[in-house]
Length: 149
Image (cartoon, rainbow, N blue to C red):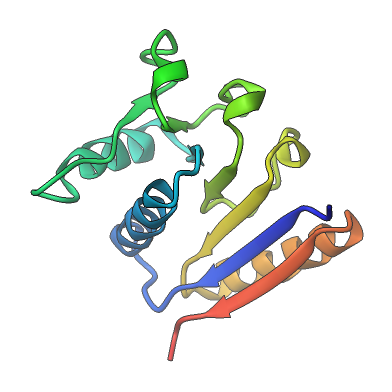
């Protein structure tokens, strides 16, 4: 089966817009029973996303763990976060990789699916075009979702 990648071009350009979409996508995947890893690009962004995931839904919550802080509970936790290239969940917990950094990780092919969030900025869109080409060259089935309209 060919690995799948979805590029989501979101209308906003701020990090808060990325977080909002990431939480919606994570919530949907969690409700569908998937194991999710969110790869950030900086520690302060991962910390912000960690806090927002706990506050996302007042009626419930999205159970998660930041791997750099608590890797001991990863087996019981369906959502993991990390900002380090070398920190990933165990192989059996790699259904979906969500990231907003267009740099493709070395571990990409160990995930069943990639969801790349692309903010509405010219540099991000340009980087997404390059990423699209790299993914098709690696024989991914790539879908683009333009949510800017």
